[in-house]
Image (cartoon, rainbow, N blue to C red):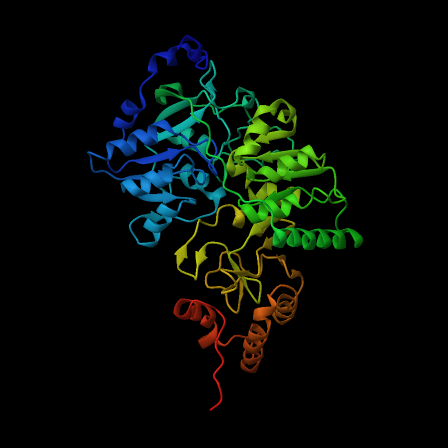
Length: 504
């Protein structure tokens, strides 16, 4: 215990050690919690679990705000215990997804860069308890985060009370890696002084009023590993298409072999596409993203990436063991920021990012659905894809052209839910090819999407829809009564392939 206390350098805080159960007992029905954690990294683990145990004998509900998805099965346990009234801004847990889609849990799906603004301006419920995972607490009371920053800083700065979980299992080498910067209120702030990916503009920890730290809990539990799957043949082909697009941009002088700072969304497809750059000619790359997954560290190891800025590090189990075991090799190539800064429109536009995110589906005009299965059922959330898409130099979406053994076409006549409009999307990529939509009128977009991105199984069916739409006219031709017929067919027949009526 004496050695553990060295993690609490502010002597007056060493007397505030409590058990997870005691800390959880302070949380009352109707309160709002701000939990650290972003894409299964740096999430609090002990107090949430103790809260779930309380639910076995007590009835209560709380609002749960986070950075993004939580690991350690916390979202799953919260959902199964039925203790969440409202959740924001992102989740990726099947049990929680089920509760949301059944209407038993409220979910606010919004841009990840906006949470801090809402809290700062008191738009949403005030945070009663910020519960933050930390490596340590400095002498002047700064909280040193672990493997994510997410919304931890804004939660801690504005919460009425703070509970700190000091996780002894997290690598101490993370101290000094973080760069905590607060923008201040809208209308009163200065430009964010960040002009290159590796700029340091803030402090190494989260400055808080020590009086608000009500309790400190010690834990010793590693983050949950990511569940990404290795690249497959389709994602390798998609990566090749993307690389060919980059080469075409270089040939006309819009990019160099250094490209531009890269952002890649969470998930297996985006990770696999980024991984495809390892054997390419591109070098001296920079990454300015929310989350660093396996591919970024593979690119660092391959000498392709010089520096990476993020707000979380989320790795598969073998990659986590390798990276954390050799972290001294990476420390001078990484910086971690609050998600408000990693996703800030001002910085994204200034740095001129290349943004690569995954689509659930997109339509023949380039509208992208990132969130809703068949237009109604929430998958995970928009996350940061909107922050980057609207503001990036190049907004690229990738997806396989078909899913569910060919019963679903990822390219449809009309997106069943629109997260990113045709006005914001620059390039779409499938294993069939890529479509550069920049500068194209709606009717021009249709041609390149059908020819380059739609799976051959669905190409004739899509052409038939569009030919009929052309007879209706308009800037953006549609057959309104058939615009969602592919989704209706999927619901009724289990496939988007539409049966032809046989002549009598």
